[in-house]
Every structure is written in structure tokens, then in C-alpha cells.
Length: 287
Length: 235
Image (cartoon, rainbow over all chains, first blue to last red; front, side):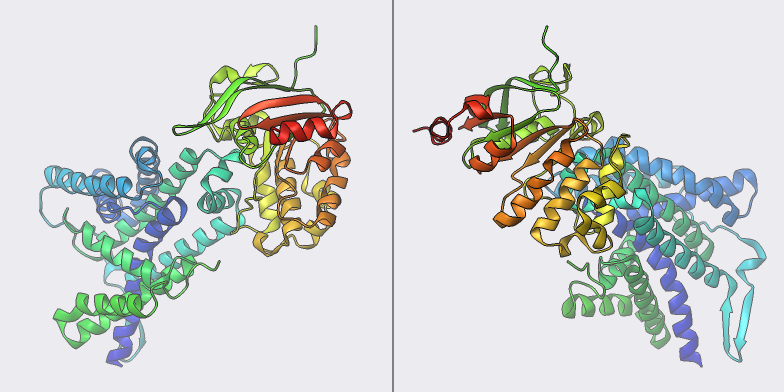
């Protein structure tokens, strides 16, 4: 029963990792941009939520109504002004620019909010839990996070395969220059993709900040978790990304159960193992 | 005063980095006409179409659509103005189904006679395979889908690059047989071909390109095979 509990907690944590990964994989899939600042943008979203909750005195979950559009707008402007000019045949310029962006965000947050550890307080929901059986109970908040992850991934999948903008994303991902012949302005499509990515980042950032303490320096580790989930899942589908997140979450939970110091190590080992035996990921793009 | 041509090129040059592919190419496409551009491999035919479609940068007043300079505009804006390119090698989107490929052609939002239904009437096989991945089609069917995708934008001017490339002669004839139906509403068409016979049969006017220069032009009926062969090979 103790192990079942561990696995369930790992699965629920995996939902959060899948949300870290979804935004990352979306951006890489559409414009071949590896966003090194992704983790720091998650932390930025957490601080935006902190500002909103402190200013308006509302619940952090409710603050999403403001944080999501704010992050989406930041994403669109960031893409149109800074990232679009770096895109081309060479993968290196966007890598370097987002690396620089990562440093700027971290230090900017440090300057504004100090290095103090913060947390968003969601109220009584944080300690509420559902007793499933003797010895197995599920926290309401982790469950909510997992349901949010399912909704985000399912929503992205719907958007990609059943809307005009999703079609435009896939066409642009297939072939930039032919997509332009269809009247699609790449710069605008990329801007929308980054806006969508940061909207997902906003949800992930707020849920992260409700779950654990955060400070300006924790971004890069979230980036690694996101990367690992993407690579485990493969770039084939968003559901693969969810599977990747869950595998990573369960591995970490089992590692921590064996020895509290093995938490992160176990996740990295499972990631390395899958990278070694199945480098294309569990659900690669079929073509 | 003569009518403004739908497309006019005035001393168009085109470059790939340091390499010059077109040298002062000038030509006129009259409204509602079918024009063939023929030439050997590397003569600059595809380059010419890419320049017109906006995939290669040009001097603004080198390309005029309805008398308006469009040479400096990006491809997506030219598509919205009503020029559609059927690219060499078809270039369907592999992640999209046949129907999604057609729908993305309508992305520019121009209204006109072409709808999904009309494309499916023109090429019934596309309707039968509408939910199949675009890459699962045969070469000829893919070419039909690429033409359908271009028509879905309701263009004023259709540019077709090497429609017959890699296709069996019977399939090529089948596709060319649809040309009258495609042009029925007064659409102007530019066809780039290596196959001179096919070009002479379908077009009203022919331009010959050789090493990036126009070496011959004239009404299709007025040119002899020998003249074209000479302009084509430069012998």
C-alpha cells in the first residue's frame, strides 16, 4: 500500500512535469527553437501570480484569469521582437539568445523580489484530501493539478487537430516556406505559438508555486524536468508528453521512497536509460 | 491603350547569394491567358516563379500585378493578393490530411468560385481520399491535391511549376485535361514545363528561357518546333 501511494503521488506530480514539457515541445515542434528560458518563464509566471494575488487579495488559482493573458502577451511580444530575428537555418542563435534571456529573467527577479523563498497560498484546498482506502489518500490539490494537466494536453490536442490555427501550426511546422505560399505569415504564427506556450507556462507556474516554495533560481531545474519529459515521451503527440511527465514523476517518487536523496537521481537515471535504448522517445513522430 | 496585363515583369534579376539566376527578364501575361515558360534544367524557370510568388526577394518595380509593384512584398502577402504557386515537387504538408491541405490553401481568406466541393468535383479521387494523410497519395493524386490547394485560395493568377515532373505520361494527360475547367472563370495561368510538346499544346503564348535570359517568345501557333529547340538548347 505504501508503494501504491508512492506511485499515485508520482503520477500526479507527472501531470505538472507534462505541463512544463508541453510548452517546450510545442515551441520546438513548430519553430525548431529550443527555449532555454522556459524554466525561468515558469518562475516568472509564479511571480506575476504573486503580484496579482498580493495586489488584489485573490486566490492564486483565480489569479490565472489575469496571469494567463499576461504571459501570453509577453510570449507574443517576446517572439515578435527578440526571438523571430534569431530564427534561421542555424539552431545556435536562438539557443544563445534564450540562454541570455534565462540569465536576465533570473537576475531581474532577484533584483525585484530578492532571493527569499516564496509560496502562493491557495487556502484550505491545500490540505484537503480524498481518502481512497486505508493508507491511500490523494491530496485535492495534486489531483487538481493532474486534472489541469489532462485538460491542457487534451485542449492542445483538440486545438492542433480540429481548428484552423492548429492546422496553420502543423503546416508551418512541416514546411515554413510553403506555408508562406498559403498566406501564412510565419512571424505571426510563431508569435501565436509562443503566446500559447506561455499560456501553458502560466498554468504550470501557478500550480508549481502553490505546490512548493519558489525563488528566482529554480527555473533551470524545471527546464530539465520539462526536457526529460519531452524526450521520454517523444515528439509525436502531446499524450506522449503526458506519458513522459508521468514516467519521470513516478521515477522520482520511487527514488525518494527508496532513499530521500535519490529523488532527482532516479528521475535522471530513468531518463538516461530511455535515451539510451529508445532515443526517439516512446511516442516518436510517425513519418 | 492596351489593357493592363495581369502580370508584368520588367527587367527582373534574381540571385542565390552571389549566383545570378535571372538576367533582366521581361514578360507580360495577359488576363485570362495560359502562358508556358519552357527551358532546360537550370534555365531559371523555377526561379522566375519563386520570384513572382515572393519566395525570392526582388526589386519592387520589377514585378507588377495588375499594374501594382509587388516585387518587394513577402510571400504571404502576395498569396493574399491572388497569386498562387503550385510548387515544384508538390510540397504537400505531410502532417495534414488531404482535406486539411486543401483547407490551408484557403487560409488567405479570398472569396471566389473555388470551394472544397468544386475541387472534389474537379478531382473526384481527392474527395474519396479526403481523410488520408497527404503523403499516402500517389504522385499524380498528390499533384492534383497541390493544384487543388492552390485553387482554394481563389487566385487571379495560378503558377504551376513542373506539373509533369516524375509522373507517368497518362497521368500528365489526365491532369492537363482538367486545365480548361480550371480556367473557365477567366483564371490566368503560367505553366513551367520541360516538356515542350505539352507546353505548345496547352498554352496560347510561349516564352523560352535559357541560362536566365528570355531567348524566344511568341504565340504558340506562330512558333515552329525548330525555333523552340534552338532557343531551348541554344544551338
